[in-house]
Image 1 (cartoon, one colour):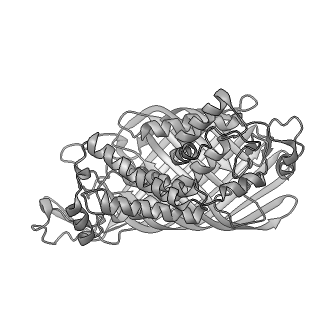
Image 2: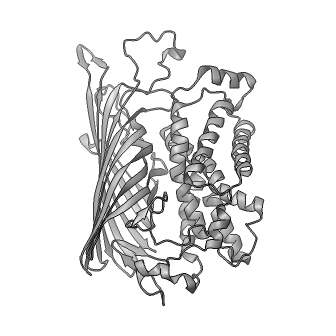
Length: 535
């Protein structure tokens, strides 16, 4: 999985090298960049549109809407069988020793909450869901229809392909989070592919698209599209307005209270903004989306530290004036924040002291309403803002007490509120951003501290979401970019993380002191300094 993540980071820039589009499609440029002559990028708000927007060819659209159900189904089933074979015969995973008896037991027992790592449940499983999703997407099905393949592929894996009981969280996170990741990767691969190219360039494009979207690459090889030359590019969506930033530098993460430790190391970010956020009326999912991924090389910290996706499902522009634009819509969100221990817990430390892991939060199944607005008082200044209110169908958040296998987080549901503003000043010379994300997570089914666990395996509670609790998590981020050269910026950022958890059914005894229903607070700060290249 780490290799895949790094490959995606490296290969996304290949989008830049797409061919100059045919001049019969230059009308698509007018709303964004004016004349297509001598195009070398243009600015729209805080965005730099780095490639000439192009409308899709009607021939390509018709061809890629042809549905192939049996091929999509065979690819979904084949992927599951191949993954099981790898787990069984290469990794020798205990969970891969399946039989008819394990399958019958899975159906008899039903679903329960599992105890895998946060990154396994909140990123790896949704990534697998994106493979199922793209089996449908790559065979002519639309966004909503492809979600059925993600559900079917996930259900097949849970019920048939493991000797562990099927997982409640996986059957939610895999298909819903898989649709978010899958559509982003599908549209990214669409930008890279070009059926008019040949030779080494064609091989490079097909290889890059395969790494980014393996199921689409496999489908193209099965059908022969991977080497078939055509007079049109084969892109289903043409080339919409795209803004992309690549950043490389350093990051420091510290626990805020009591000088509990600091970690410093290298970090990289990729940010993509795809499509027109102020389109008049749209019901096409992910015609606009934003994507952020952060990786790091910091001792004791995970390689993948952050992934955020905001994909528009439908929207309507409500204000369209000379200096002001605004739209409202429904959006799907995918949020993943991960860190690990900065400093080991000291012996005899109070149990009420916050966990020495800075933060963990995953929300792969989230949808809600949002508004986006832009104000342009003059050519030198552009201000953009947004607000989103979302329901969290499934979320996981760090806990101070529950520990079982790899799990140090509670499952739950709740809501999130997101707001932010970006200011582009002095014609791109200075860009300032401020954003805040607030999450409220409620455990549905916590364990009873006073229950008799003697009959449970290993004396531990089973099929629960963790501590019976209510948690809040807040992430405040401030960023600033100063232009050094035409597209090169020096960027700095500060991240503040607050977590507060009320444990509704716990009593902590330390010596002669008893604390009922404890509430634990923790604070962390992250800083980063990077060079940012705006493509």
